[in-house]
Image 1: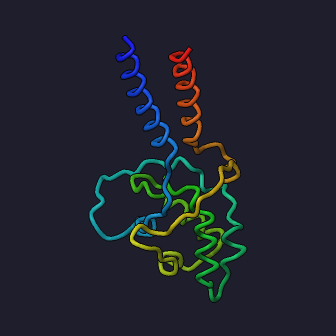
Image 2: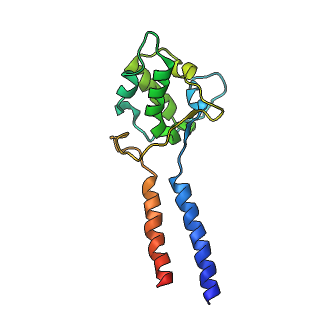
Image 3: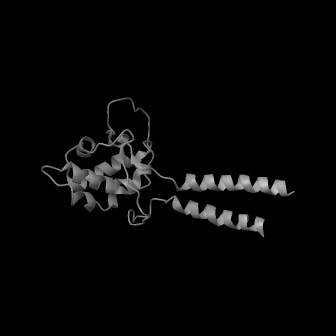
Length: 170
């Protein structure tokens, strides 16, 4: 009986840890695919994209518009501001089945009146794309309430797993 409980406890712990790490992980890069024009040449017949879960219309673009200014558009300032703005949405932007990248760039260009392709031509990363620095959790990026954060799922896993594990030892 103790062997069965120990085996169950081990399997349960592995599943909980896997769920915890999978639910809490997020992109640490912005893929170069987000820079590809949505109207690029190629066959996109009947390929409808999903709506973006982030409402980019009402985001605060001052982090970009205050630092990335023409006529020279300094790459270091522009790319730094772009990364600062876009990294909190890396998961959504890297999902090329939705309209997030095109919506974000449309609103960046509307708010900053930037030349087409400015960020694609100036901001170069490595083979994975632009690296996103680790950021502390913050709810200041999306005040519209349209983006669901995956962090509560981590808390739910812990809240469910802890009492069950505690019950086995009591």
